[in-house]
Image (cartoon, rainbow, N blue to C red; front, side, top):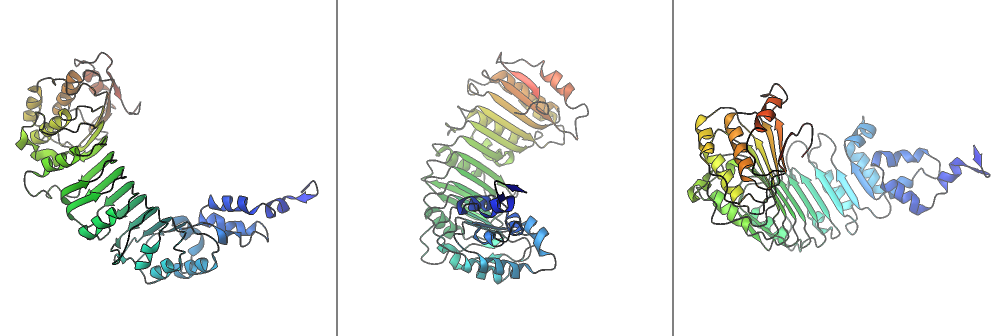
Length: 418
């Protein structure tokens, strides 16, 4: 077909280089390579693609009987122009010597986004050449050994670090964080255990940690607004000051607005008078999520109430229950709680997840409804394995409870999201 004397193939072939680069930059690697069939002129256009992502889709389309090592080597050898992103995350990938050669072949003056995902076998020891990528902004590593070489001066442009199952030296890693002055997001999942998790990052806004640490130290973290902490084991604590020291450290963060904790971490706050207020307060906290909350344990419930009362600006509360047994003593304890003395005055939204409707859960909700004078919405998500009618009978009972706020609505969150 021709239009004004020019074929559609010519239109594709004669696109300006800038448009072609934009098109290729928006495509996965497998689709960028596919463009080679569009016309003779497009056969090698993909070799200037600024992003090389070897993932599940690449594996499905190109590998077959071909060896991954040879294909990656050939692509890197052919590639021309700036390379901004390199990601290696094909399924069942193991550590091998070729990885270091590929990393060494990357243009260290261009790479902004680097991902290495080892799926099986031993951890891969990262080569020192990786630490020469001075334009790096995003670093994601899975199942690697992380050890910056002597003389490493930091990544001045690094914004995001995501490490999973990575072997770390806590002292060395603390120095690494301090040498990345623009770091905004840090995620550490199932990495080496820390005696002390030390974070020194003035621009850090988000921290997520899953694993084990004995203490945490925040230095110069004036921008840290969101913290998610979960723990690999309930047996990690080394003395009954762990919870209080953790809350004390968090209370020193001037910008902290959102906190996610596993509820059992709070249990030893009872030493400090729970369920009364703590001697320290989370003065800026607006959103609190307590997960895996055992409603059959008085210590856990009382400490949760203590923490809630010690967060004077709290607006959103989310509780994810983890309850199997009915314990009358817990319900009796909650019935004995006095209505809050105004410490829940700013609480507007409560979200109760995996709600089974046992008496202790109902009494906890009753306490919140009676104490939160500005509450607007109480959302209940029923536990599918424990509730037979979709939670309607629970909802109808909750609606009979007294409410301190005339605006408070009680809803089934399966029908309306929080």
